[in-house]
Picture (cartoon, rainbow, N blue to C red):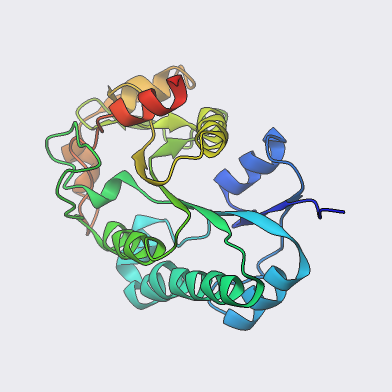
Length: 250
């Protein structure tokens, strides 16, 4: 009898991981805690991969807060780059031992692009503007070693929990509400796409996006935000979504 295939979700406690669990869109979802599986620990990855018949890994694990990455760059490198390398190494070892490939969906960021002029396609020059984007770009390069991979470049927000009281009218992105992103991930997986893909929604300002979910949010300007920061943020990180639209349409 053929064993049932399972999906391994890494980073289940994060916002996106939690939304994936809540959606119930992925069958036989295995969600280890960070104590059970830490991507900085190869042995723990190896043990988990041996436990189940995984056909898919969704990797949401990352040090994602820009301020944290700027303040603790070595930790960002250890988690986002070397952690990804550990995971990819163990997937490759698994293939050698069991003669079977595991597909990975790796969540990346629009921050790999310069984020100054917008409308960035997957073929556009990658030039991250802060440490977070730089570490995520390097993680993408590592994931591309695998035969079966999807790298999703995206930006998302939780409409039910907009924590800002102000939002910029002159910062533009293709940010996607988190529940819609989960649905998009599932659709892309079902289409058997392989490669790098921009995933998002129509170009809007941060204020436009958040106002829909938080009526009392106040408008501000990008300059009001960056004066209190010690790192760069996007001006126009909007992405060209033609490939995404084509994939989910067909």
